[in-house]
Image (cartoon, rainbow, N blue to C red; front, side, top):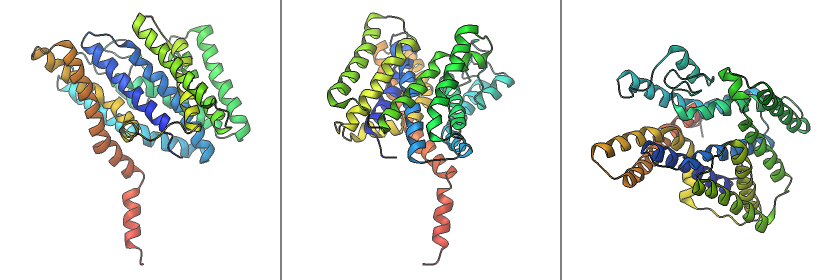
Length: 335
Protein backbone atom coordinates (compact mmCIF):
# COMPACT_ATOMS: atom_id res chain seq x y z
CA UNK A 1 0.00 0.00 0.00
CA UNK A 2 1.22 3.50 -0.82
CA UNK A 3 2.54 5.29 2.24
CA UNK A 4 -0.01 7.70 3.67
CA UNK A 5 2.17 10.29 5.32
CA UNK A 6 -0.69 11.81 7.29
CA UNK A 7 -1.37 8.45 8.92
CA UNK A 8 2.34 8.02 9.64
CA UNK A 9 2.48 11.41 11.33
CA UNK A 10 -0.55 10.60 13.45
CA UNK A 11 1.04 7.32 14.53
CA UNK A 12 4.17 9.22 15.54
CA UNK A 13 2.29 11.87 17.51
CA UNK A 14 0.01 9.29 19.16
CA UNK A 15 3.01 7.27 20.36
CA UNK A 16 4.80 10.37 21.64
CA UNK A 17 1.64 11.52 23.41
CA UNK A 18 1.54 8.23 25.31
CA UNK A 19 5.24 8.60 26.19
CA UNK A 20 4.63 12.10 27.57
CA UNK A 21 1.59 10.84 29.48
CA UNK A 22 3.59 8.12 31.24
CA UNK A 23 6.59 10.37 31.87
CA UNK A 24 4.38 13.03 33.47
CA UNK A 25 2.41 10.44 35.43
CA UNK A 26 5.53 8.80 36.89
CA UNK A 27 6.88 12.17 37.99
CA UNK A 28 3.65 13.30 39.60
CA UNK A 29 2.84 15.68 36.76
CA UNK A 30 -0.24 16.02 34.59
CA UNK A 31 -0.69 15.16 30.93
CA UNK A 32 -3.57 12.73 31.09
CA UNK A 33 -4.84 13.71 27.64
CA UNK A 34 -1.76 11.95 26.25
CA UNK A 35 -3.61 8.70 26.92
CA UNK A 36 -5.93 9.68 24.06
CA UNK A 37 -3.13 8.61 21.75
CA UNK A 38 -4.61 5.13 22.20
CA UNK A 39 -7.93 6.31 20.74
CA UNK A 40 -6.11 7.65 17.70
CA UNK A 41 -4.23 4.36 17.35
CA UNK A 42 -7.48 2.37 17.37
CA UNK A 43 -9.06 4.51 14.65
CA UNK A 44 -5.87 4.25 12.58
CA UNK A 45 -5.84 0.47 13.04
CA UNK A 46 -9.37 0.15 11.67
CA UNK A 47 -8.47 2.41 8.76
CA UNK A 48 -5.29 0.54 7.81
CA UNK A 49 -6.78 -2.95 8.05
CA UNK A 50 -9.72 -2.03 5.81
CA UNK A 51 -7.57 -0.33 3.18
CA UNK A 52 -4.99 -3.13 3.13
CA UNK A 53 -7.64 -5.84 2.81
CA UNK A 54 -9.20 -3.96 -0.09
CA UNK A 55 -5.94 -3.33 -1.92
CA UNK A 56 -4.38 -6.72 -1.17
CA UNK A 57 -7.00 -9.46 -0.65
CA UNK A 58 -5.92 -12.08 1.89
CA UNK A 59 -7.39 -15.27 3.34
CA UNK A 60 -8.68 -14.99 6.94
CA UNK A 61 -6.14 -17.39 8.42
CA UNK A 62 -3.29 -15.66 6.59
CA UNK A 63 -4.50 -12.30 7.86
CA UNK A 64 -4.39 -13.53 11.47
CA UNK A 65 -0.96 -15.10 11.03
CA UNK A 66 0.43 -11.87 9.59
CA UNK A 67 -1.07 -9.80 12.39
CA UNK A 68 0.29 -12.09 15.11
CA UNK A 69 3.68 -12.12 13.41
CA UNK A 70 3.64 -8.33 13.34
CA UNK A 71 2.40 -7.72 16.89
CA UNK A 72 3.40 -10.60 19.12
CA UNK A 73 7.20 -11.16 19.00
CA UNK A 74 8.26 -7.72 20.26
CA UNK A 75 5.48 -7.73 22.83
CA UNK A 76 6.49 -11.16 24.11
CA UNK A 77 10.10 -10.05 24.42
CA UNK A 78 9.24 -6.98 26.51
CA UNK A 79 6.92 -9.12 28.64
CA UNK A 80 9.76 -11.59 29.26
CA UNK A 81 11.99 -8.70 30.32
CA UNK A 82 9.31 -7.54 32.76
CA UNK A 83 9.01 -11.06 34.19
CA UNK A 84 12.79 -11.39 34.55
CA UNK A 85 12.94 -7.97 36.21
CA UNK A 86 10.21 -8.92 38.66
CA UNK A 87 11.95 -12.18 39.55
CA UNK A 88 15.19 -10.25 40.08
CA UNK A 89 13.44 -7.81 42.40
CA UNK A 90 13.73 -4.82 40.04
CA UNK A 91 9.95 -4.33 39.96
CA UNK A 92 8.88 -4.87 43.59
CA UNK A 93 5.28 -3.87 42.89
CA UNK A 94 4.86 -6.43 40.10
CA UNK A 95 3.35 -9.67 41.39
CA UNK A 96 3.58 -12.72 39.16
CA UNK A 97 0.87 -15.32 38.86
CA UNK A 98 0.98 -18.27 36.44
CA UNK A 99 -2.53 -17.67 35.13
CA UNK A 100 -1.86 -13.98 34.61
CA UNK A 101 1.44 -14.71 32.86
CA UNK A 102 -0.25 -17.06 30.39
CA UNK A 103 -3.08 -14.60 29.82
CA UNK A 104 -0.57 -11.86 29.12
CA UNK A 105 1.23 -13.93 26.50
CA UNK A 106 -1.95 -15.03 24.74
CA UNK A 107 -3.71 -11.64 24.73
CA UNK A 108 -6.47 -12.81 27.06
CA UNK A 109 -7.84 -10.07 29.33
CA UNK A 110 -7.26 -10.92 32.99
CA UNK A 111 -7.03 -8.99 36.25
CA UNK A 112 -3.54 -8.19 37.40
CA UNK A 113 -2.64 -9.65 40.82
CA UNK A 114 -0.61 -6.48 41.38
CA UNK A 115 -3.40 -3.91 40.96
CA UNK A 116 -6.67 -5.71 40.30
CA UNK A 117 -6.98 -3.87 36.99
CA UNK A 118 -7.58 -5.71 33.72
CA UNK A 119 -3.98 -5.31 32.66
CA UNK A 120 -1.33 -7.72 31.33
CA UNK A 121 2.17 -7.81 32.81
CA UNK A 122 3.24 -5.05 30.44
CA UNK A 123 0.54 -2.56 31.34
CA UNK A 124 0.30 -0.81 27.97
CA UNK A 125 -0.35 -4.23 26.45
CA UNK A 126 -4.01 -3.83 27.44
CA UNK A 127 -4.54 -2.14 24.10
CA UNK A 128 -3.22 -5.21 22.29
CA UNK A 129 -6.02 -7.27 23.82
CA UNK A 130 -8.43 -4.97 22.01
CA UNK A 131 -6.36 -5.12 18.83
CA UNK A 132 -6.43 -8.93 18.78
CA UNK A 133 -10.18 -8.93 19.37
CA UNK A 134 -10.56 -6.58 16.41
CA UNK A 135 -8.35 -8.79 14.26
CA UNK A 136 -10.45 -11.87 15.04
CA UNK A 137 -13.67 -10.09 14.08
CA UNK A 138 -12.00 -8.66 10.99
CA UNK A 139 -10.81 -12.13 9.97
CA UNK A 140 -14.41 -13.29 10.31
CA UNK A 141 -15.49 -10.53 7.94
CA UNK A 142 -12.96 -11.72 5.37
CA UNK A 143 -14.95 -14.94 4.92
CA UNK A 144 -17.74 -12.83 3.42
CA UNK A 145 -18.05 -11.14 0.03
CA UNK A 146 -16.69 -7.57 -0.01
CA UNK A 147 -20.16 -5.99 -0.04
CA UNK A 148 -21.19 -7.72 3.23
CA UNK A 149 -18.10 -7.08 5.31
CA UNK A 150 -18.92 -3.59 6.54
CA UNK A 151 -22.41 -4.67 7.59
CA UNK A 152 -21.00 -7.68 9.42
CA UNK A 153 -18.45 -5.60 11.34
CA UNK A 154 -21.08 -2.98 12.20
CA UNK A 155 -23.46 -5.65 13.51
CA UNK A 156 -20.73 -7.50 15.43
CA UNK A 157 -19.30 -4.42 17.15
CA UNK A 158 -22.77 -3.07 17.82
CA UNK A 159 -23.83 -6.37 19.37
CA UNK A 160 -20.90 -6.45 21.79
CA UNK A 161 -21.33 -2.82 22.82
CA UNK A 162 -25.08 -3.27 23.44
CA UNK A 163 -24.33 -6.33 25.57
CA UNK A 164 -21.92 -4.27 27.62
CA UNK A 165 -24.29 -1.33 28.07
CA UNK A 166 -27.23 -3.54 29.04
CA UNK A 167 -25.60 -6.13 31.30
CA UNK A 168 -22.32 -4.50 32.37
CA UNK A 169 -20.44 -7.83 32.60
CA UNK A 170 -17.86 -8.23 35.34
CA UNK A 171 -15.71 -10.98 33.83
CA UNK A 172 -12.44 -9.55 32.47
CA UNK A 173 -12.99 -10.87 28.95
CA UNK A 174 -16.55 -9.64 28.53
CA UNK A 175 -15.80 -6.37 30.31
CA UNK A 176 -13.03 -5.79 27.76
CA UNK A 177 -14.77 -6.93 24.61
CA UNK A 178 -17.97 -5.00 25.32
CA UNK A 179 -16.40 -1.62 26.05
CA UNK A 180 -17.63 1.13 23.70
CA UNK A 181 -14.00 1.91 22.89
CA UNK A 182 -14.08 -0.95 20.35
CA UNK A 183 -16.27 1.26 18.14
CA UNK A 184 -13.14 3.30 17.39
CA UNK A 185 -11.92 0.45 15.19
CA UNK A 186 -15.23 0.52 13.35
CA UNK A 187 -14.92 4.29 12.99
CA UNK A 188 -11.57 3.79 11.30
CA UNK A 189 -13.12 1.22 8.96
CA UNK A 190 -15.84 3.68 7.92
CA UNK A 191 -13.26 6.41 7.30
CA UNK A 192 -11.28 3.96 5.16
CA UNK A 193 -14.38 3.15 3.12
CA UNK A 194 -14.93 6.87 2.53
CA UNK A 195 -11.27 7.17 1.52
CA UNK A 196 -11.54 4.29 -0.94
CA UNK A 197 -14.68 5.81 -2.49
CA UNK A 198 -12.92 9.20 -2.75
CA UNK A 199 -15.54 10.70 -0.44
CA UNK A 200 -13.14 12.94 1.45
CA UNK A 201 -13.61 16.43 2.77
CA UNK A 202 -11.23 18.44 0.64
CA UNK A 203 -8.49 20.74 1.84
CA UNK A 204 -10.46 23.39 3.75
CA UNK A 205 -12.86 21.07 5.55
CA UNK A 206 -10.09 18.55 6.17
CA UNK A 207 -7.99 21.24 7.81
CA UNK A 208 -11.04 22.25 9.82
CA UNK A 209 -11.51 18.67 11.07
CA UNK A 210 -7.87 18.46 12.14
CA UNK A 211 -8.04 21.85 13.84
CA UNK A 212 -11.31 21.04 15.63
CA UNK A 213 -9.93 17.73 16.90
CA UNK A 214 -6.69 19.27 18.17
CA UNK A 215 -8.61 22.11 19.82
CA UNK A 216 -10.85 19.54 21.48
CA UNK A 217 -7.91 17.59 22.90
CA UNK A 218 -6.23 20.83 23.99
CA UNK A 219 -9.40 22.02 25.73
CA UNK A 220 -9.63 18.78 27.69
CA UNK A 221 -6.03 19.18 28.82
CA UNK A 222 -6.23 22.87 29.67
CA UNK A 223 -9.50 22.61 31.60
CA UNK A 224 -8.61 19.35 33.32
CA UNK A 225 -11.97 17.92 32.22
CA UNK A 226 -12.62 14.22 32.43
CA UNK A 227 -12.71 12.23 29.23
CA UNK A 228 -13.42 8.76 27.95
CA UNK A 229 -14.02 7.03 24.63
CA UNK A 230 -17.36 8.80 24.19
CA UNK A 231 -15.47 12.10 24.00
CA UNK A 232 -12.17 10.97 22.49
CA UNK A 233 -13.59 8.70 19.77
CA UNK A 234 -15.27 11.53 17.82
CA UNK A 235 -12.16 13.69 18.19
CA UNK A 236 -9.86 10.88 17.05
CA UNK A 237 -12.13 10.11 14.08
CA UNK A 238 -12.25 13.78 13.07
CA UNK A 239 -8.46 13.94 13.30
CA UNK A 240 -7.93 10.86 11.11
CA UNK A 241 -10.62 11.87 8.61
CA UNK A 242 -9.15 15.35 8.36
CA UNK A 243 -5.64 14.03 7.78
CA UNK A 244 -6.63 11.57 5.05
CA UNK A 245 -8.71 14.33 3.42
CA UNK A 246 -5.66 16.57 3.34
CA UNK A 247 -3.67 13.64 1.97
CA UNK A 248 -6.20 13.06 -0.81
CA UNK A 249 -6.01 16.74 -1.68
CA UNK A 250 -2.22 16.57 -2.00
CA UNK A 251 -1.64 18.87 0.96
CA UNK A 252 0.66 16.58 2.95
CA UNK A 253 4.25 15.98 1.95
CA UNK A 254 6.92 13.69 3.29
CA UNK A 255 8.73 14.74 6.46
CA UNK A 256 11.46 12.11 6.95
CA UNK A 257 11.73 12.42 10.75
CA UNK A 258 7.99 12.08 11.32
CA UNK A 259 7.74 9.27 8.78
CA UNK A 260 10.48 7.40 10.61
CA UNK A 261 8.86 7.96 14.01
CA UNK A 262 5.62 6.65 12.54
CA UNK A 263 7.44 3.50 11.44
CA UNK A 264 8.94 3.14 14.93
CA UNK A 265 5.73 4.01 16.78
CA UNK A 266 4.89 0.44 17.81
CA UNK A 267 8.31 -0.14 19.36
CA UNK A 268 8.20 3.26 21.05
CA UNK A 269 4.80 2.38 22.49
CA UNK A 270 5.97 -1.02 23.77
CA UNK A 271 9.40 -0.18 25.17
CA UNK A 272 9.21 3.39 26.45
CA UNK A 273 8.02 2.67 29.99
CA UNK A 274 11.24 0.80 30.81
CA UNK A 275 13.35 3.88 30.10
CA UNK A 276 10.79 6.23 31.64
CA UNK A 277 10.90 4.31 34.94
CA UNK A 278 14.69 4.32 35.03
CA UNK A 279 14.88 8.03 34.18
CA UNK A 280 12.39 9.05 36.87
CA UNK A 281 14.10 6.92 39.53
CA UNK A 282 17.51 8.33 38.56
CA UNK A 283 16.11 11.84 38.70
CA UNK A 284 14.86 11.22 42.22
CA UNK A 285 18.24 9.92 43.36
CA UNK A 286 20.09 12.84 41.76
CA UNK A 287 17.52 15.44 42.92
CA UNK A 288 16.89 16.57 39.35
CA UNK A 289 13.97 19.05 39.09
CA UNK A 290 10.62 17.60 37.99
CA UNK A 291 10.40 19.37 34.64
CA UNK A 292 13.89 18.31 33.62
CA UNK A 293 13.18 14.77 34.81
CA UNK A 294 10.11 14.59 32.57
CA UNK A 295 12.11 15.78 29.57
CA UNK A 296 14.81 13.19 30.28
CA UNK A 297 12.17 10.47 30.64
CA UNK A 298 10.50 11.45 27.35
CA UNK A 299 13.82 11.47 25.51
CA UNK A 300 14.93 8.20 27.11
CA UNK A 301 11.65 6.44 26.36
CA UNK A 302 11.62 7.61 22.75
CA UNK A 303 15.27 6.69 22.15
CA UNK A 304 14.82 3.25 23.68
CA UNK A 305 11.83 2.68 21.42
CA UNK A 306 13.84 3.74 18.37
CA UNK A 307 16.72 1.45 19.38
CA UNK A 308 14.28 -1.43 19.83
CA UNK A 309 12.79 -0.72 16.42
CA UNK A 310 16.20 -0.97 14.76
CA UNK A 311 17.66 -3.83 16.80
CA UNK A 312 14.58 -5.90 17.65
CA UNK A 313 11.47 -5.17 15.60
CA UNK A 314 13.05 -4.85 12.15
CA UNK A 315 15.34 -7.92 12.48
CA UNK A 316 12.46 -10.00 13.88
CA UNK A 317 10.21 -8.91 11.05
CA UNK A 318 12.79 -9.90 8.45
CA UNK A 319 13.48 -13.21 10.18
CA UNK A 320 9.82 -14.18 10.50
CA UNK A 321 9.03 -13.13 6.95
CA UNK A 322 11.65 -15.57 5.69
CA UNK A 323 13.61 -12.79 3.96
CA UNK A 324 17.09 -14.15 4.84
CA UNK A 325 16.05 -17.59 3.58
CA UNK A 326 14.71 -16.11 0.34
CA UNK A 327 17.99 -14.28 -0.21
CA UNK A 328 20.01 -17.47 0.34
CA UNK A 329 17.79 -19.35 -2.10
CA UNK A 330 18.24 -16.64 -4.70
CA UNK A 331 22.01 -16.70 -4.17
CA UNK A 332 22.11 -20.45 -4.87
CA UNK A 333 20.21 -20.18 -8.14
CA UNK A 334 22.35 -20.33 -11.28
CA UNK A 335 22.49 -17.14 -13.27
